[in-house]
Each structure stands twice: as C-alpha cells, then as structure tokens.
Length: 165
Image 1 (cartoon, rainbow, N blue to C red):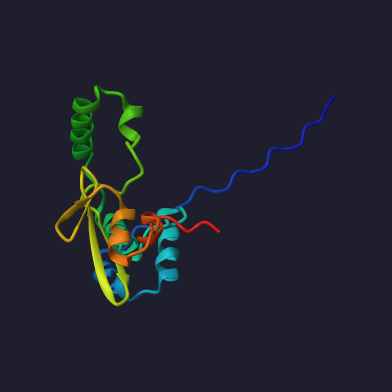
Image 2 (spheres, one colour):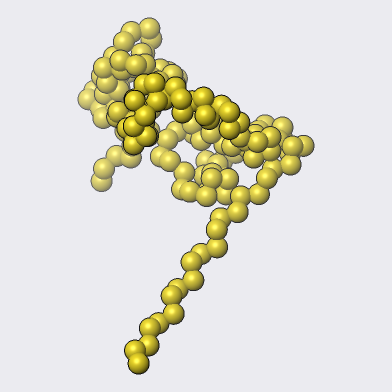
C-alpha cells in the first residue's frame, strides 16, 4: 500500500476587520501626515495585498476610500448591476474584454503630481494621452522632457514604474 504525504494546510483566509464609524475622521485626517512606510502597511492590512508602485497621493486617496468602504459599506449591488449593464452595452457582454484595460495607463482623470526642483508639476490623464499646463501630450516622456530639458522615461519620472537597475 502506497502512502501519500498529508496535504499542507492552506493559510487561513485573510480577515479584514470592519472599521468603527467613529474612527473614520481621525484615520482620514492622519493619512497626509503618515510616513510612506505606514501607508504601505495600512494598504497591506486593509487590502490584503502588496501596495502598487504608484505615488503617495494615489495611496492616500485609495486608503481614504477603503477606510470609508470598510466603515460605511461598499458600492451597492444595484450600482454594480447598473455598471455591468453599461459595460455590456460597450463590449457586447464579453466579460473578459471588459476586465482588460486597453493599456496600462492610469485611469482617465487621474492627476499625476511630481515635484521637480522645488516646483510641483501636475499632469492629467486624458482619453487621448495627457495634459500638462493646458497642452495635450501623447506621452509622459514628452512631458518629463519638457519639465527637465533632458530625456526621461516618463513612467519612471512620475513614479509609476521603478527605474531598472
């Protein structure tokens, strides 16, 4: 008779506790002053995943939403159903297609903020590319070149991707 080794136990499911409603204002107020390491740790505890490599303001805004979501509840099922119906109108009901973004650009309307040589630069993601100082651009690299006067990988310059070694 052949013996098999017992299967390794699977890790317990991640339990993300609800946040008491009375704690929400204080937690939201603390986000801007929190150290980036603390923000990343909060991300891990509130989402159960590693934080994405985006800038600090992105982490703050998503954490603020998540704190409120855990305290007050998330998107209502009726809203999700309506969004799914709208998605079907756009992609013909192909759920796989709906869940794949056309590219890896940040979502339209996202504001990318970078301080460079003491000046804060704000770029808005648009449908056709990006907008910086009221002018349209096709790439973040072109904007980074405008800001610095030298060639840059725009994704690295704005902190959306780490520089390769």
